Length: 128
Image (cartoon, rainbow, N blue to C red; front, side, top):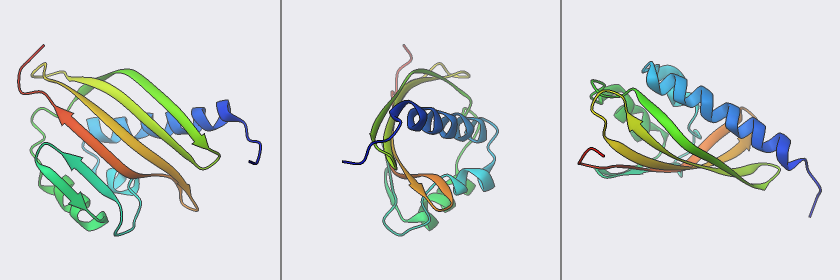
């Protein structure tokens, strides 16, 4: 295996996650779309079902209800799997409703930068 600086890769992914969260919180749908791998194999799973391919994810972003979108991320963890791949997991609390959820994202370095290739989002129905 090729040697790489794991802490540097972790910092890069953490920075990408922070930028993604900022775009999510401000509903910057143009920027949000750029965080997802522009490939038909990209996947976003959620309680509402799966979205497959960049177009479905982008369409979802444009149509979604944003009345309770702002959230506070807690317990963000980054697992570096290699020089070009890592997994980010976190828990979050929606600041408006207090609803809690969790998310996992597989990030891959592409020529365009770090991109989400697979994500799974859950959201509890009950506060607390």
